[in-house]
Image (cartoon, rainbow, N blue to C red; front, side, top):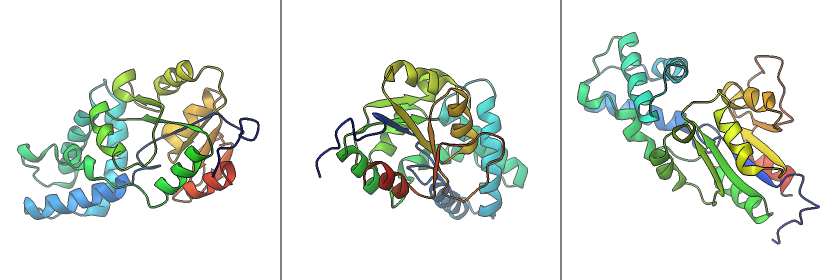
Length: 228
């Protein structure tokens, strides 16, 4: 399919959050927790541990900056403490070690290919280290012209660093950000005046006054809109 002409495209650049939008981190962490329970002979309530992960990881990211590998390790330690299971010191990095195997969502690559074929430049703005993102990009079938990580900006979304850095790289081109996390992406992007497509995979309700420019339940809806 030929690329759409610039006049036919409403944007020039589409950036994505990676984990939760392109990569299924919940499935990856569930698998990692189940493997840990087996190999370390622990009784782990995976659902409870996953719910705590969402709460604790955001808190660790809001503290003094450390690498994302460090964030995952400290998050794992705090989950273990809260749930009362002993995490062997040599296994404290199990979440970071599992990240290269976290899978993409089934709709990710078809949507990315459609958008790339239609002529959009693609980018990633992710709360991760450069080295870890390299592994996740191996699951993705599109090329990304723009990549901004927490390691590069020294902060984690919802802090504005990713968006400020991306603005400097994108310049005056028309830009849309697409992401699943209302907290990490939709709110801070709109605060910067950046149009946002909310990939609301879980069918959540907005938790504040901010509203995205568009909302879809999956990436296929975004591709249907921008690359019909």
